[in-house]
Image 1 (cartoon, rainbow, N blue to C red):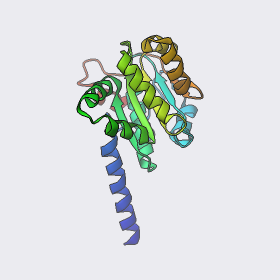
Image 2: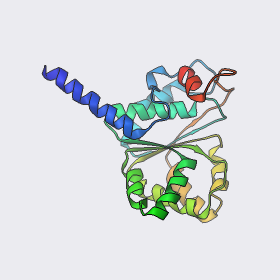
Image 3: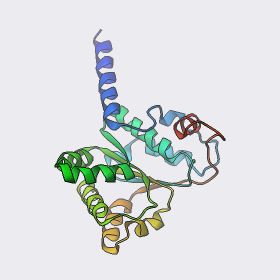
Length: 212
């Protein structure tokens, strides 16, 4: 009975962390990753990332590659594993996050939103670029990156290679400061290959969830 109660409590805690994380692909799991499809995903590297050591060390991870190769699914699988490891996770699409931050500045909720972004063990920022950042977006991103630097991990997915991120930030001083904190000592998964989505498939979540 004691063991069942412990298991039940652990399950409830995991479910709470998953609800708070709001992962795009809630069914993504590191055990289900497809290493057969050609997309330059190194099995040994990913399995090492799946241990979560990089999160314990407050290091970052950049997942880049063309549309449809499973970047978001892989990010969510690592996020789900972090939740299983009793870590706090927040998933945000970067365009939506910037919109939320702009609204938060106006209605006074910015401090609360900012605290939640900074305190999580793992912050997943999905869909970086290609639009150039505004002055306000640069400032907000700099504050988030600065406050998390050395304290928590950031996982970014992007169709753009890391070498193109400087131009997206669109201001040399901010770009140097942000990328120094993001990219220095970060792990990278640089994917390539054809889209994994089935032709005519109903949605990205189904296609990548089944085949990533």
